[in-house]
Length: 424
Ligand code: UD1
Image 1 (spheres, rainbow, N blue to C red):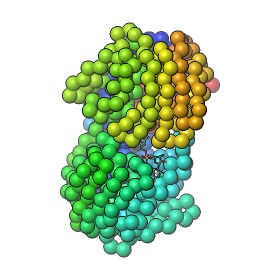
Image 2 (cartoon, protein in one colour):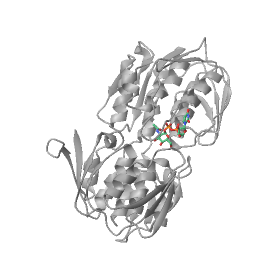
Image 3 (tube, rainbow, N blue to C red):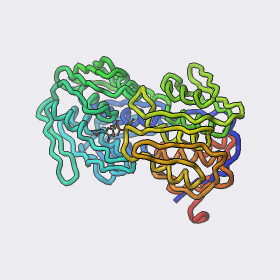
């Protein structure tokens, strides 16, 4: 198994090209299940989670062609079965996204129920309730969701109990082929929802209100193929900006979208960063200064993203002052705290709130990644720490950060992927 060896203390400086967004790519890659035609998706990042969703499609007999230019062609006309097995779903919860399109297009689906995950129990009750309200019969048996509908799904008015990104995406896809109009209230407003809605529109779907909390979908009889690009990864962008901030450096993210990062950029400015933006770039310059601690609560978009919480925790760990961070989306998303404290951070957790008092320096240490974003917080802390940090369980990082070592090295960091044989 690989580990990441980071020798900290270098000030990051330079440009880094941002990849397509993992969380946008996953729904875009399953939406072609809605048509018997070729769909080409561009700017797809090469990540473990993307490989997993393509394996789920491959298991169903869908033909998948990965091109050198970063695009993926998907043709579901060859599909042979509508089943997503446990072996694949258990490695990535987002596999549940196949449920809506399969049901809408093929009238049935058998999808393994995703279990809990490190950051919380993460049920999918809202996905299932929504599909039931649209006329699906759903049985959960032996860990599998068996869903069926006679004829087409029916349009319905749905009000989610909480804002759910995956739930909104699943129902949005299902509703495109339903009979009549579906109204999704308390819908998620994330940029990834807009990216998906625009792709579905390019496939012939009739959707209004994507990006607001009420989405209206007028079902159509059939959709057609299209070509669509994945948006830039706002979480990857924010992560590199945090890496620049913690080292007192200057980092310019290219192929990025500043409009998706409003609150994150405001918090970085509050931390003392000088931020400049252009149509597709963001530049952060700390002018050699140490960051100031910031406080925030995570919230659904346009609030502070839970997927950036851990990275800001690492910045706060080395900042001047004390920051208070409340996590409101997931119940167990502070697993990076003990690892950061092992590096010398001063963080106390009380329930869903972490109190971070910045220290003058962190020390390199062997640490363990526990989930995708937590692992990036360890990378960020390690870049600024004195000495060597060895990050174990690197597969978490590989789920969501494309060519991490190459990108960090390009910014002047001292980072190497090593094998656990050599670094037990
Ligand atoms: C997506 C993102 C993830 C991000 C999260 C919140 C993808 C692939 N992943 O995850 O990176 O951290 O949004 O921004 O896009 N919930 C229920 N019942 C449901 C659905 C959700 O109780 O049926 C709860 C979850 O347990 C969680 C909260 O609602 O506490 C938000 O979850 P949700 O927005 O659905 O997250 P994901 O779509 O899984």
